[in-house]
Length: 527
Image (cartoon, rainbow, N blue to C red; front, side, top):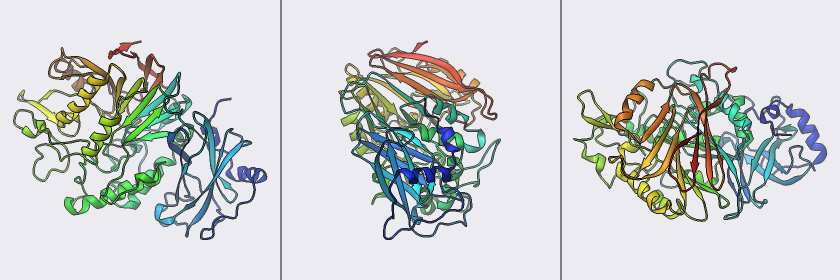
């Protein structure tokens, strides 16, 4: 029988607690913490897992009986038990871990589990007294370099709570992926546009604002199902903090001082993000005000994901207008900064990490996980002059060229595919050795999109750009959806799963496009 996380979401927590108590020994908790008696379910936000390794993963939950009531608070420290089992019925419990939920972290729990067997599915749940959480399913990765015949992964991005229902998450959960990649804009910090439902915050700034936005997301049953279905890997884009922010510089609220107030906004956003996701302790803020999310996840000898952070370490936008806090479109002919090789989107340390790890043996495939369209978009203004939008890779072309050159050097041994989000639509394109020369080699292929809910109205505009961008092969921003990929040693079977609207629950998802990518051949083959 297949695992059904949505069914588990609606099990009675109290009945499960009584059943669990009959098969496990009593736990008295830690000396400094308490085990309160909740009068309502404390696990309103479900459970999640992330960052799988060959011997473990991170498990997450948050104790929140009243998650949208800013005046409600749980007093003090709370003891939490986590059970890990080989079966969904928990007759084969292999580990019990203990943690303390702290008020300064909104009573979120991060349990870093190790010492388990590689390449195995596991089930987990949390307990506080007789209250028991929903059950989640996760897994460990295969041992490094061990043979792996297949892997299924999914990716998604751009989930504005107001722009639609999270039905894409629900459909994604039904596909039984081995791992799910979140490519940014997991939340939006600001309310705008037509809404099928409303966020509790209009424009986030305080820690409580960001916590409320994460809470209303986590309460969604479709998102809970996706979190409970498989482990997640994370990067972020801009809306986890503020539109188009650049390292320690970005947009603030009216009347605020960007230099003084944006670092406060960023700190609040990052803290709420860490609290709300199954991230390791190493992702906490460090002494230089950074939070590491870039990294690598390897799966046997088959595939590795290289996950990039293009926000924290980037240079300020090229030719930024005075007083401007967001990206803008600038002239390619007059903005010399666009081609300045000293400007960075990754930072020196992350560039070094990529050089040492991306597209290396023993993997047959390397997936570059980044938050937006990787390809250049050649555009023109109303006078016909060439322009570039400074927020994406078109604003950092010398930095991107370092990655492309790396792909070209290493593609004989490892095949690479780029995935991205941000565009609120689906795209398929070639990664060219030199985008200014269409006849240059194609070193990889790229897939973008779609969006979980976030809207776009640029279909005709994007299509008008295609004659000037022959590396772009197809796009459709009129639908919502996610990417689903089946990997073998020889092929990647990429399905771009879509639905015409997320404003109704009765709309099914189906493949909008399907591509087969063959190992050793950087080409888009439509199936």
